[in-house]
Image 1 (tube, rainbow, N blue to C red):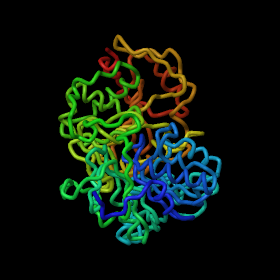
Image 2: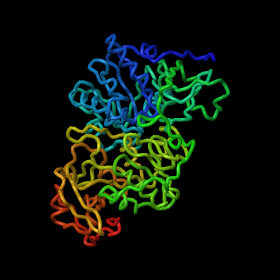
Image 3: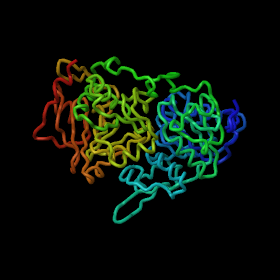
Image 4: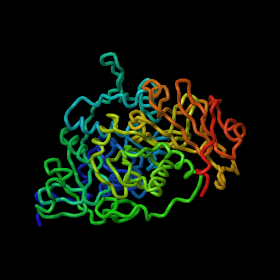
Length: 511
């Protein structure tokens, strides 16, 4: 079979990247929809020839598996990358260390904004105008999304339009697109049959085309014309310049292929093993009390995935619609390093379309993690001490969902608790308080939430707080804990305490 689009090797593709280019890269954590063969080839070329140099990477999601086997850690070498414009950073710890050591410039911008920016670049629009990021570290009046001292150029501006404040994220050229699908036909049309998500591949391709750049698509198979139905094409041939075939392409870094992830063969969710009772599950159980039948829901990574587990175990998962910012609608979100895919998705759309829905207020409720929280309800998940995570879709989601539930333990590092018999027993307190006087970086603005009248809840294993105009109010505590010793003394500020303070339901602490 002869393809009408040039089929080249990954190493030949890497030679198309020039010094100073901006490379737009598709993909998500755990190797999901990531053109890993192209990224690895780029590193091989640099190791052999010391070129290309001073690249700018642009990616909406975090790329990597935290082990260095894929993602931007493959490009974490001095001289190859000058700047990383990223939606998330935690999946590539080596690259993160170079950023913290001021070896690479870095901007952390909201995941939804970057995905929408690819579309804006592709349409030759001036950029993205949105309220997403106002009052957070992305706001240029605070940090402008700059993640270290050597990052100086302003990439975000404040606009005043018809008496309202907006943020403006200007367009910039994308010289090379690294994208991925499952199959390519003879014309060069790309399908994503076995992918767990399609992300923003078409947006990156359009951005490169509009910039006069080159689009390189990595696929696992090539097929004859007619074998990909027109409505199954996720990136048309008009937006593709070269095809790279990687027969070893895996669906995720954890497994070759799981048909339930691409929705081709559902699994029985009720038969998946239940989560054991733990403080994380207690948080998930209490947070899940905020669910209502028919809700459209977003779940963040980490403890919030317990909400999906609880809904699945209770049989409620089919009466809700769980969604992920990666474009996943329905099913049970997967946990851990492959966050961003689901078992039994009902639909998989582009990331840009999903964020348009989120930004338009489509979410009834969102469950997100929290690394730090302060008295005014500001939340930090993006940069805590030596941990450089980035915001991902957190800012788009938390600023636009009708209700937000933050989930996390009251303290961290060494916390040990016993759960059972209808109560919580703290056996060893965590060494690090998570409720602090002032967060070190504002990923969620409590003031902005109060301004727009958003309903916000903070759920921990031992206490539940609401957010009002004057900050946090304690409304529930766990049975078995002491209010002063186990709650108030473990916080670095004194929250308001509701006169109707209640005990959390004892059933949450019963196996």
